[in-house]
Length: 214
Ligand code: AP5
Ligand code: MG
Image 1 (cartoon, protein in one colour):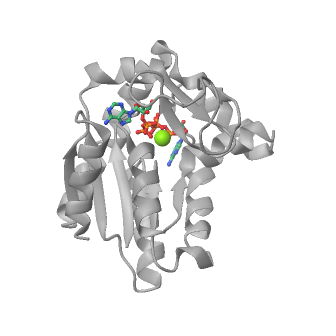
Image 2 (cartoon, rainbow, N blue to C red):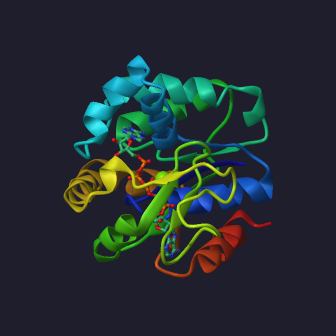
Image 3 (tube, rainbow, N blue to C red):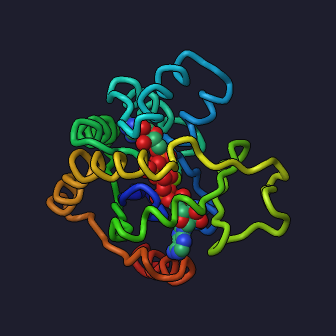
């Protein structure tokens, strides 16, 4: 089961990807998380990515495509995976399709989590993220048991650098310009599915499970 999560920044891609991966026991591959881990470890990739991410811009395709194409060839991806935050541009989608075609594979489901821009800014300011394990919470909607501490791994939670309202606005502009065209791209491939991301997260997950048919 090869699944792509589409949707605006803060739509809930990461939240739903986590739940899908736990249910179907497949890896969650988030390019944003990969970049944040590289920033934390101060790698060369992390330094390059940070300069774009902090401005709300996309990291250039050449820094992300090979990384993902290699990752999906790993052993743990044999039964499928959820790609969260990739592809984000038409060239990224084409590169992924080309790599999959080379091994007789294809994307099975593209799931678009729809949330209007108005809802996004308030969601983002309440988000808290765990840089250690990638878990995501919300101070109102999805609180942790102990304030500021990850339920899953016990690490301290942070407000992401790119969740400041000005940066979120820029990320939304970039999303509409560069990522939204993927909705048409996957519609034409016959694999696009839409879910209403403004609903409670369990309801959103229920809709996704229905689509995945299990
Ligand atoms: P990335 O980390 O992918 O960020 P994003 O796409 O902007 O999306 P987010 O992670 O912000 O949101 P999400 O949809 O995962 O929502 P979440 O589940 O957290 O990318 C960051 C940056 O890295 C990019 O800007 C770019 O620079 C770079 N990058 C990454 N991939 C790239 C690529 N392929 N190419 C180029 N550059 C790339 O939910 C949001 C909040 O809402 C949370 O607090 C959550 O708890 C809450 N929430 C979730 N669901 C619900 C619900 N149903 N009801 C109420 N609250 C909810
Ligand atoms: Mg995310």
